[in-house]
Every structure is written in structure tokens, then in C-alpha cells.
Length: 461
Ligand code: SF4
Ligand code: SF4
Image 1 (cartoon, rainbow, N blue to C red):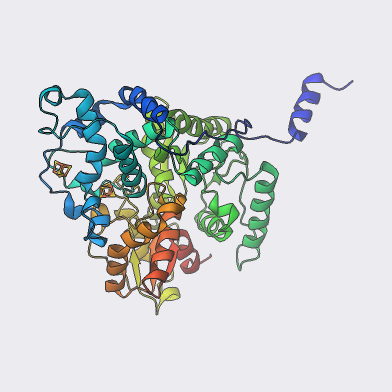
Image 2 (cartoon, protein in one colour; image 1 turned 60 degrees about the vertical axis):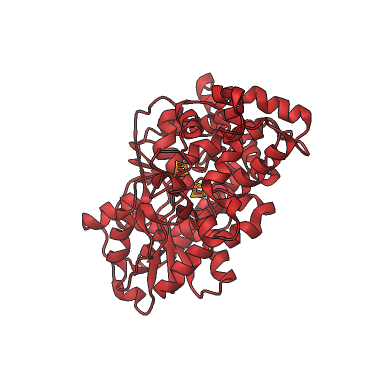
């Protein structure tokens, strides 16, 4: 007679694996700022006021030093309502009306204003569609006003009250319901990875390369942006090629592999923690040493800097392929032939979440200068780089697309000035935005990530 435990395990193995909550959640989005929505916002305000948000709301002295920092104001200087302090004041006025004692006596003196439909509508326009939470202004602010946190708090209030751009919330609902933000089912993901592995093995010298799924005890647990299995399988192939060539012991989970966390952009902590916990549980199940972020800006920041906060610490190390690639080069574990890229001119766009908010800017340069002969910096680079205009969920808010493209002008101008034929970056949102602005501003440059760069230049032993 079959061992019942073995029988049960077999049954478990053959059951289709359902991911996410499977709740079919559809966020209740309201049409406008009705009295009920405004009332809800009033109720929610106190719950979003942590120390950083409250000091950012109270601390602005309106010195104007942040004005030059923002890509919106640099690219669209005629619109003074895009100045960082003006945008933040749409939230600050209401906060002061509620919490500044001076506002009880001289409301206009402290710039306080009750939350009206008009103020809320402007808040919606400026804080969803006029700020990418890139935090460049924060680095210029003598008072340390954290625009990323301030804008996230305002968005969280609006979202919970039912006012959020539909497509952005749909992306989060999809992640919530299906376990990844493009609803890639488990079996389809496994088939895609197996197909990519076959393609990789067809490359010269790569016959023995593998993309191990669910390998327990692997050193690195590689996470992906859903756009890779869906639209950019070559990125997975390129990453796997580099890791195999260097003899890196890695695996991908067949279940929770999505490193994105768009709940960073709608301000709902409960969802952000849930998505992080799925990755955490997979790390534990597969018992890996390093959680390895793929090339994704907010995904990297979410895993590296936010996940340990959301979950109260983690018992494993967290790094990114950008950092790992640099280490492999420094340790001599991959050999590169720079002549593979001769004839092209390269520049690198620092994603805000990887550089300014993530602390990773020298590693990509280690990778690039090892792989190409002609690399040129943009005028503003590293932690001082301008946002491309696609951050903060901007790509998922089509109603603001014209402003997003207009705000990318300063980045387009800097790319053009380098004479680059290839714009490198390490973020899928940046990829899409950079492609769009290159096309819009008539710059003839390809957009590529670091894995693709290395994959072409790598010398297979
Ligand atoms: S730099 Fe800081 S204090 Fe000055 S206006 Fe901007 S946010 Fe306010
Ligand atoms: S966070 Fe970025 S986009 Fe938002 S106001 Fe500051 S510089 Fe502008």
C-alpha cells in the first residue's frame, strides 16, 4: 500500500499552482471628489502622518532651492504650478488647516486652507501626474523635505478614499489577485523559462548553460520584472548567460519571482507588505543565501531598502545583478571583449531608485567601462541624475502621458549632448520612458540594459 504521506505529496505536486490571493479584487474607484470622498480623506489624514511625513509637511520654509532640481520645472519652465514646493503645498495647506495652531487665528498667514473639491483636484493632478517621487528636490532642500514620502502619503490618502488613476490601481490589483503584476500563470511562466533556456543553449558555447527553477539551497534567488517573461525574454536569457559564464549558483522561483511593488506608488502599505512577504516566503522555501534583484529601479529599492522595514528585518542578504555583475568583473570571473561594441557610443542613465534612493551608481560604471571603449557621462549623473520622467508609476497613468513626455525633455537634451548611440540603464520603467523620449525628441539611440550589454561582449570559455 502506498505511503499516505507520499501519496499526498504526489497529489500536491500535480495540483495546478494558484498564485496570489485569487480574490478577484477590483479597487472601488470613485468618479470625483464628492463630499463623501473628501470626508473619507479627512478621516484618513492622521493615519498617514508618520515622523518623516509630518516634518516634511511642517518644515518647508519656501526658500525655493528645490525649484531648479525638478525635471518637470526644468523641462516645462513656463508652468510655475509644477514647482516642487507649489505641488507639495496642495497637501501642506490642508495639513496646516488641520494641525497648525496659527491657522486657527491667521489661516492665510500660514497658507492654510480647508480641503475643498478644488484643492483636492489640484492635489490629484500634481501629486499623481506631476511628481515621479524621484527625490532630486529632497537632495537640494536645506530642511530635508522628503518629497517621496510626502507624495506617497498624499497618494495613499487619495487611493484609500477611492481617487487613483485606474490603470495604476489595476496593475496593483492584478499583482494582488494573481501573484505578479501581469497575471502570468505558473505553468506559462515555467514553459517560458524552459523555452528561454533552450534558446540560451542554442548560443555558441552555451550548450550546458541552465536556468534552474526552484533549486533549493542555491546561493542566489534571482527575481524578475514581469515585463521580462512577457515582452523581454532576451533580458532573462542575457542575465542567465552572464551568470552561467561566471559559474554563479542561482535559481528562479516558479511561483513568486515578481520583484515589482507598485504599492510603493499608491501608498497602500498593506499591499506593499503582502507582495514583499511572498518574496520573503519563497526565499525561505528555497533556502537561498542572497535575494538577487534583477534590473528594475523601484523593484530594487523595494527589495533592498523597503522590504526589511516592512517585514521587520530579514535573515538573508539582499543585492542586485548590477552589483553582482560588477563583483564578477572585479574578481575576474567573466572576460569581456570590448571590441564587440566598437563603433557605438554609450551613456548611462541612473535610475532614481537605484542611484539616488538606492546608493548604487559606481557598480554600473564598473560594468560599462569593462565592456565598452567609448562611454560618456551625461551632465547630471549618479545621485544627481535627473529622473527620466517615467518613475513613480508614471508609465501606468496614461491620462498624464503628454506631461510625462514633456517632462522628459531635460533628460533627452542631456542624452543628445553625449552623442550616444546606446543609452544604458537598469530599469524597465526607464527603458520604456527612454525609448519614448528618444523617439519623441528624435534621438537616434538604442536603449539597453546591462545584462544585454555584457551578453554581447562576454567571452565564453
Ligand atoms: S528647498 Fe525645501 S524648504 Fe525650500 S522650498 Fe523647497 S521644499 Fe521648501
Ligand atoms: S520628487 Fe522629483 S518629480 Fe517630485 S517634485 Fe521632487 S524633483 Fe520633482
